[in-house]
Length: 323
Image 1 (cartoon, rainbow, N blue to C red):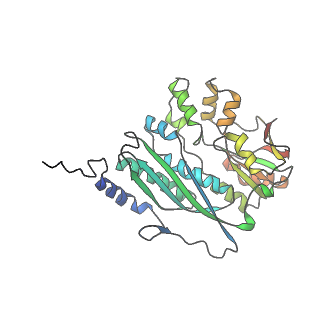
Image 2 (image 1 turned 45 degrees about the horizontal axis):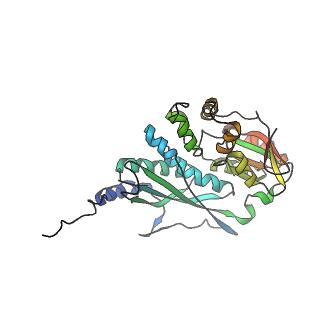
Image 3 (image 1 turned 180 degrees about the vertical axis):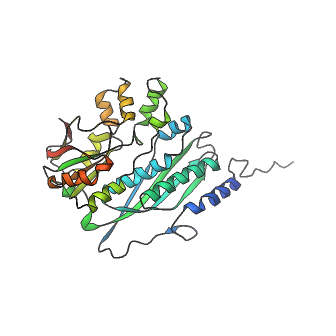
């Protein structure tokens, strides 16, 4: 007697659900589709365009979002983690691709995530050019999933921001974070599980702020912007030095900015040492702009509604020092 046949559905993959998901998100995808890839032209009239690419994920914030039943902001987290890095070069994002991996496809949840990604792309003027949804039973636990993103943008070579532009005496302008953004969530989850931190989704799951338009506004206002640092994993001590050349460090004035409520809640648990917090979280600053001393006032004016504040100065030395 022959053994019974085994279908792809029996193995845990629902091709019908995948087809429904593809149809549901088709209207959210922009760009020239070629059947197997997306095509997007570079802007016309550029003298020496440089392609800038970034890729990232959201990390274990996904697990807390699942636990608290709040998925809506995760798409913005994903886009922000990529385009905020790109903004540090002065590039403008052109296209974004996403990768969603699941154990079993929930078409409603998947469409919610893609809609959030598409909305964030629209907010920064970037086309959601496509992506991949992979159903992999056995690799992910029931209900679990992962998200990754990839962005491509462009900048004139002569206009690229970076450490090569920075000089001693430059001003450091801080832009507030919207919350914890997408870093430190293994520690956040440990605090929640220990009962030290309330599992408040409004507080803990605020989407990562998008800084692309802030950088664009500063440049449009004539600010002599020299470099920028997206404050992600490793906090200010690890990320700010990446925007500075060898031989120069940052001196930050403690008390010059106010940590947001989520940051205050974490620090208020009394369970995270000061140095641990600084090395893990953004401490209330999601982006730091390094500007020429004479442009500090213009930067604060151009980005006043964005909450910009002067937080420090570039000085001889290395690393980040608090004064």
